[in-house]
Image 1 (cartoon, rainbow, N blue to C red):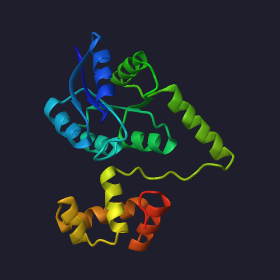
Image 2: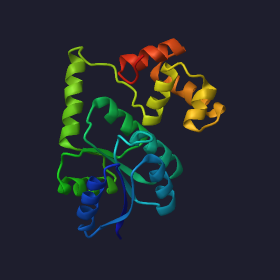
Image 3: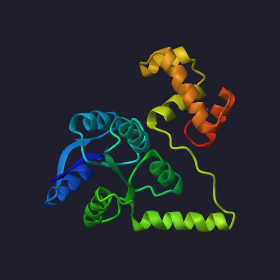
Image 4: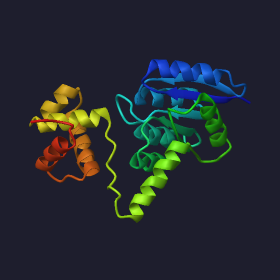
Length: 215
């Protein structure tokens, strides 16, 4: 039986290369491609893939948030993260979200195929670069050098931060983002909790400190 694979990445050339490479494997079948998180969620529901190859940095939400939403709707789906970012914070958050593996984009297509096989066999798969990042972070923690992990923000969350920094009210932000004021209030409260801020002033300082917005 073929493993039905859904590709999620916002770079068309990478998706095309992955599609061609995976199609050469006799046991894999690419059933769809998505360039953002919302499209991935919709296609996952429509196509019910066995495995999703998921990028981390998507234009509308992080691949980690997409992973959470997809697994909430389709808990039996396997999700394998494919990213060039191998920071420990991202790796931890992805695995906590339910991803079955995390591999580096710098690897070969053979490594991707091997990772898919491992994940479908029920095993956790981490590429050598990812494992090295975890070991390095562990060594730093033993030496007291580890840095606190930072939350991964989607592009929409960053956009919201920028609008808050500009001093816009919820109603004004809702107009710009074409959402209801109630939705903005919910997103704003959720974002403040995520970044550990309890006031608008703290949100503004956070956005400037992280280089997300400027005054």
